[in-house]
Length: 494
Image 1 (cartoon, rainbow, N blue to C red):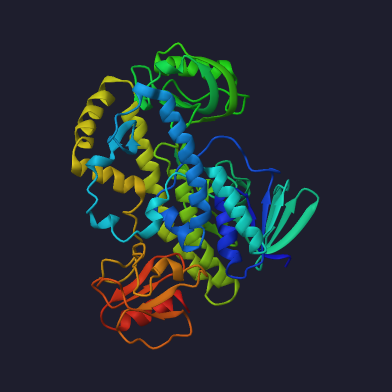
Image 2 (tube, rainbow, N blue to C red; image 1 turned 120 degrees about the vertical axis):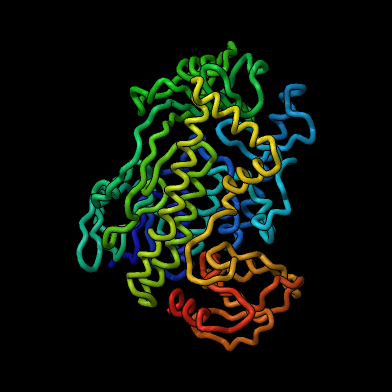
């Protein structure tokens, strides 16, 4: 074999998966058709599980620097808006169907927000910054990122995959498609990809324009559509409900963007230049399984949906973190291939939820009487502490839980980032991606399958021990050593 794993697609999902495999000593190649990072405007924020994943791999500092650059752009935009900017104290906590969620209405004492540690401060990072940080980390781990190389075909056998990439022919034990919504890997492998067809045309762009002072800040709902202005200078987004674009791949012109913005906003804006632009729709589809033999899917290759709520990048990073350590254990012979079945079992329900979450937003944003009536009701809910907290919990991902055996409320959830008496936190001990058996006073014996850390907590967490999988998910927790701990060790750390 030339490699243990070949990944088709070098965006943030493919690079994150490559890093997760590389840290485990897996021989990885990433095939990316683009020669440079794609500068087209895309995701601009990350949710809590994504921030925790980066933090647990020691990338918090690098991404914090990128976030500060983004915040500087935001502050410049706010200064340019002057009196039309939201008043001080009106903090933006996200949106649902263009309905603003105010930070003042979030119940910060909700237990789902507890013990998130420094990762909770990492929110505003662009997709381009993430790609650059992950590419640098992949290089440090010895991953071969082959730019300007595109997968054009492959054949599978009982023991591996033969990949064609232009004039190159590469052999690997496993192939993972991280090659986007129009995935070549998904098509050739024959994955079923059911879903609902598109009904809208959306644009997102970075532009220069005249007349922008007439545009409202942030998300705006009008009689003719939706438009967004900000949160960085020149960023616009429009949504029109007259069907999908006739030519999805045609070049996007300033005239097209101008017409769409004028239609959605009712403001006589003139676009004088386009730095970056993309079209999108609400096409929503999901593979019925994320694995067929030696071929797996992650990110948009496994599921596509509208970008509302910023779920796409986060969903893909979650796929990569869940799959990476499992595939590494199978590659090294430390676990049977059946471990990979838990990848679809755990990630498919979350992907299905995201598709429905975005579908619901499209319905609420439609400019028709029935949608407006429903929107008025949801708007009332958003104006309450309970309602805003509900929506923010969903957007931030803190609700996510895998269905794992055990009665303790932490099992299946993201591990709390407890502060320890020595000044470290739980996340500091997960950088190597090996998982952790944390003993806070149970006097556990060392186990050769997973690192054991005996420590004193800075505050009583209410339990004496916790088994954390490499992806940061709690596999067991309690105050008594029982058979459930032995079973969790056998299941995840054979």
